[in-house]
Length: 105
Image (cartoon, rainbow, N blue to C red):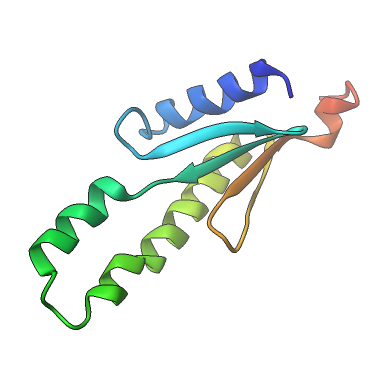
């Protein structure tokens, strides 16, 4: 995986407001860049405040937030001409568009 694509994805995320402190990380996997979100900064304070509440597990899962974030990320990356797919596990897998790889873009 070229470092250029990793840097491009990171720059696009920063431009879209997902900079340092957003919990997003990127890493290369084959010909793709995988974007993931680590919500520790959000979850830990929630758990600390609500540790005795019976519904804590549902609050800590934050599925709706993960889905909204995944949709936002696929939109930002897709608008930049990349192919971005949100996986069920919450990761967003990003590749160069097929035309760009073929030299047509």
